[in-house]
Amino acid sequence: MKPNILKVRDLTKHFGNVTSVDGVSFDIFRGEVLGLLGANGAGKTTAINMVLGIVTPTGGRIEVFGKELMANRIEVLRQMNFCSTYTQLPGNLRIWQNLKVFGQIYRVPNLNSRIDEVLEMLEISHLKKRVSGELSAGEGTRLNLCKALLNRPRLLLLDEPTASLDPDIADKVRGVVKRIRDEEGTTILYTSHNMRDVEEVCDRVVFMHKGKVLFTGTSEETLHHFEEESLEEVFIRVARGGDIESNRETEEATK
Amino acid sequence: MSFPTVRALVLRYLYLYTRTPVRIVELVFWPLVHLLVWGYLTRFLQQNVGDDFPHEITFLIGAVILWDILFRAQQGVAIFFLEDVWSRNLLNIFAAPVTNADYLGSTYAVGMMRASVTSVMLGGLSVLFYSFNIFQLSWALIPFVFNLLIFGWALGMISTALIVRWGPAAETLAWAVPFFIQPFAAVYYPVDYLPTVLQWIAKALPCSYVFEGMRGILTDGVVNWKELGIATILNFCYLGLAGLLFVRVMLKGREKGLLTKFASQ
Image (cartoon, rainbow over all chains, first blue to last red; front, top):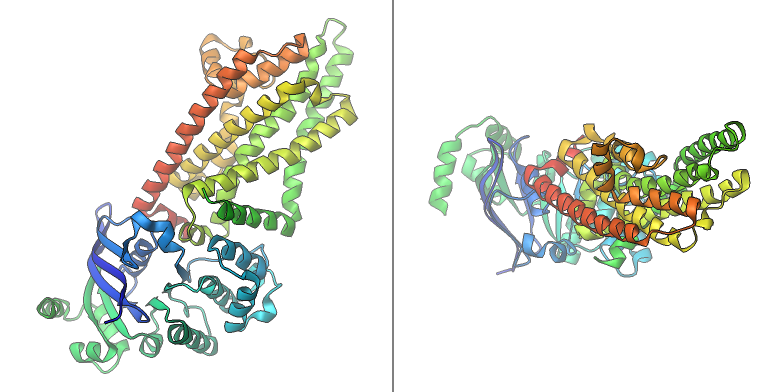
């Protein structure tokens, strides 16, 4: 059995009276791409922010590389990275300057050649000297991905990485995700509202609804469980709250 | 504190300045305006109020230069944080292997650089325009600058903590906080001229000892080392308390998701 890279147990987050994440548990094993799925407000981004240590959990436990996250935050974060559609790199800096700063923060060896490598991987080498604020949305997302890949992370968190991309670039990004998983054995936690992404890239999925995990399994297992023909249909059904209680009972039985 | 991380964060700030020259104007413009206004006011008072007017009126120019050291050090910390908010880069930084100490260390360094740039410029111009040489403060200049930098950093941490606590709407505090204390800091007038209650506030502010000390040297040529010692002790108390406040607010910020709210503004 492959080693457990990320272990989340009974993760809970309350913001005042609002429960954003409610007793969530899941694992990711080495070299696996796990899709964290759910409608807006399902708790995915809050869960990711807790795994990054930006939000402190109200309860539960997060272990990364076998170590408790908050007690070993800096050591763990040095081997992780993330890319979110909700963040940008400073728009006044040139692309190479932004990557140089983050490369130094993550202590990337042979930084200059690594910068060239990731720019080539994301096909934006020609933009190296451009000012980041002048990039299109798609180019900006690819720059964020370059930052996320700089330190060859053992665990990579991708929060809707294809959200603002056209189908061609989105396809290339999915290709990069598969490539780093296959060639570098990177473990990836992937959120997306694009079910095509999920079907193509993810080995397993975790469906969340109102802060809880409804189902965990491969795409096939998910389709079988929900008796639907596509993940898109499962997503819509979950988003609309269909059969949630019975699914929860099924999951309890599975445990 | 990790030196490579601090260096990387400072590098980002230096890139920002080389990429946007208008920010250098901000470093130069306001201090220069203050120097010109207070410098010519000093010259006017010296020439028109009569022989009874004290020679040490030149302390107004010294006060402009020293106040700017405190202000730039405070700005270095507070604006550093806001730069990340404005560029939606905050999560990239706080989700990276950066400790509070690394972050604060880099803001201190940036504050020191900002203060150095403006104080060298103002020092040179005050000799040129008004024949006022800040180096007449001699060796006392070192503890003066040291104390103002530390107090500026403490105020910067307090400003940042308040901005994190109250959100982006409170970002004007980054500029306002030093001016909250300026009336009691004895920058342009002696502490004795304040009402008794306000004198107590002034005595609780380390920078008031620096400005009083500067006037003492220009008037009597005497350095009051005891008062500078009090200022230094007070400063370390403020720095410690401001650091605790910053760390506490960051912990609360993580608990309440305040940092992620900044990112989604």
